[in-house]
Image (cartoon, rainbow, N blue to C red; front, side):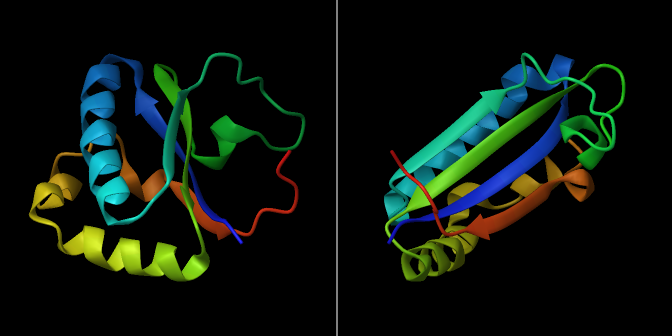
Amino acid sequence: MKYVDGFVVAVPAANKQQYLEMATRAAQVFKDYGATRVVECWGDDVPDGKLTDFRGAVKAVDGEIVVFSWIEYPSREVRDRVNQEAMKDPRLAGMEKQMPFDGKRMIFGGFVPLLDT
C-alpha cells in the first residue's frame, strides 16, 4: 500500500523563489532514493477558519504564504528507508541552516491513504 508524508509550512512571500529552489533540490534527492511523487502547493485560497485553519496551525503572520506539500512512497518501509538515506545525502547537507522559512512552525506526519480515486 502507498504511504504519504504531509507537510504544512508558512513561507514569507518574498522567499518564494528560494523555497522553490530548496524544494526542487530536496525533491530530486527523495525521488532518487525511492519516493514516487513530490508535490509542493503555494497557498492561493487559504481562508481563515472559525476554530482553526492552516494559517493558525503554522502560526503564519502577515506576509507569509501557507505551503501544503506531500511526498508519496510505495510503502511505509520505503518511506522509512528513503528518509534515512536522504538525511545522509550530501546534496541536503546544511539545508536546515538555509531554510527560507521557520522550520519550528512546520507541521508534518505520515499517512496511510484511505481513499485514492
